Image 1 (cartoon, rainbow, N blue to C red):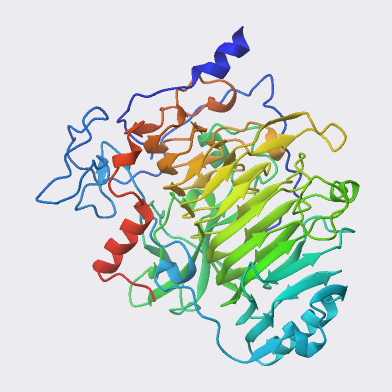
Image 2 (cartoon, helix red, strand yellow):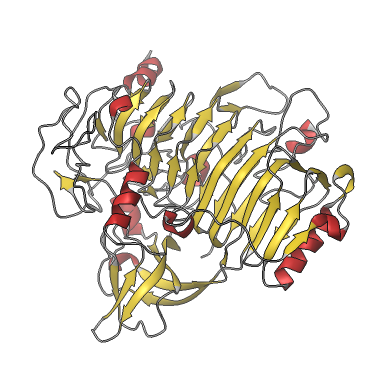
Length: 580
C-alpha cells in the first residue's frame, strides 16, 4: 500500500510561485534499474539565483488571459515572462534563463548549404546497390575532403553497405546524401562497438593551463575575473568549470552519492571569449554566453582554454541503419549510429533511421542501440531527424536515441524519437547546460529487462539522467511516454540530483511529467500531461524541496509565446546582441 501511495502521490495541478534556491573520466557504467529501497538522506540548500527581482504579479493559473499593453496576442503569458522580459527578470527569486544561445552559430544563422569541392563516393568506387562493402570508398572520399581543407562528401541516391566505421576528423567536411528518402547508408559492424559511433565526427580536444577565478562567477554573469588573462584572446574557446569538492557535494545533499566524480575538475560551461581586458586588475574576460550556475572560488573555479574542436561539419539527407542480429546487438553497450564528439558549430538535418537488409528477423528494428550522441561539444543543431526502433533497450546506457553529454547550447529541434529506452536524454557526468529540445516528439519509450525476456518492459521516459544538468529547456514538445528530472540516487554510478533550473515549456501529448529538480525547476503551460511535482522527500523526490514552480497546468494551448526559445532568440537579436 505504501508503494502504491508513492506512485500516485506526485500529481499536482496547482501553480506555486516560490523563492528559487537559486579531466580524468571514469568509464561509464550507466544503468537504469529501479530506485534503491533505502534512499540516502539528503538536504537541499539555496544556490545560483539572480539577486534582482520584479514586483509580485497577480497572475494565476486560473486566469491566464491578460497579455499586457495594446498587444493583439490572444492567450496568456507566464508571470516570469512578460512581454518586456529581459534576462535577469525575476519574481520572488524565480527566473528563466535566456536559452536563445542554443544551436549552430548560437541559433543566429540558418544551417549552411554545403559548398566547396565535391567528393562523390561513386568517384572513389563506392557501390550504391548494397551488393559490396562501400565503407573503404566512402572513407577515401572523406579523407580526400579532409586533405583538401574541407568539402562535401556526396552519397548519390542508392543504398550503401558499410562494414566498418566512418570517421570525420577535420573541420569543414559535410556528408550529404540525396535526401533521406533517396540515399540509404547501413552499417553491419557489431564487434567492439561499445561506446563508439558508426559515423563519427571526432575532434581532438585539449585543455590548456588552469586560470583560477579571483571572484565567484554568479549565475547570469558574462564577465569573469582571473589574475592573468594574457594567454587568452577574443575568439578563443574556453571551458569554465570547477571541482566537485566535498563542500559542493555536501551543499547539494549528495555526500555518499556523488562519489565517482569526486575531486575532479569539470568543464561545466563551454564558452568563447568575446573580450579580454588586461588594463584592470584582476583581468576581465567576457564570455559569449552567460554563466548558468554559481562557480565558486571555494571549489577551484577556473577557465581553461580548449583547442582541437572541429567545426562546420555536418550530415544531411540520409537514411541510416545499424541493425544486426538480435544477439549481436545485445553484445555491445552504448553504440550509436552517428556521433558528434569534441566539436562546435556542427549540424545534422534530414536524417532518419530505417530497417536495412541486414535485419535477420521480423522485429522491424532500425538500430543496434543509440541514434545520435553529442558529447564534449557546443553549438550543435540536430533537426528534422527521426530515430526509432533500437534492438538493445537494456540497462547499461542503451536505446538512447538523442543523447547529450557534457555539452553546452545544443539544439535538438523538430525531431522524433520512437520506441527507445530513453528517446531524448541528457546523460553521464556533470556539464550539460543551456541545451534546448524544441518541438520534439517522444513516443512509446520503454525499458527492456533482457534480450531473452522481451515482454518484460516498463515505461521509459525522456529525461535528465545524470548529475545536475543545469538550465536546459524542453520547449513546445510532445510526449506520450514522459519527461523526467529527479534525484536518481545511486543509479547510474551515483547520478543523484539530475536536474536544476530546467524549464518545461508548453509540453503536451498525453504522457507524464515528473519534475523533482534540485533547488527549483519550472513547469509552465501543459496540455494533456500528468504533472508530478509534489515533494515527498523520499526516493526520486528526496532533497528536492522547494516544490518546482508550476503555472498554466492544462492551459498550454493558449500559452504565449508557444516557443520560449524562438521568442527569446528574436528578442536577443532585436536588442542587437548577435554573436555571428
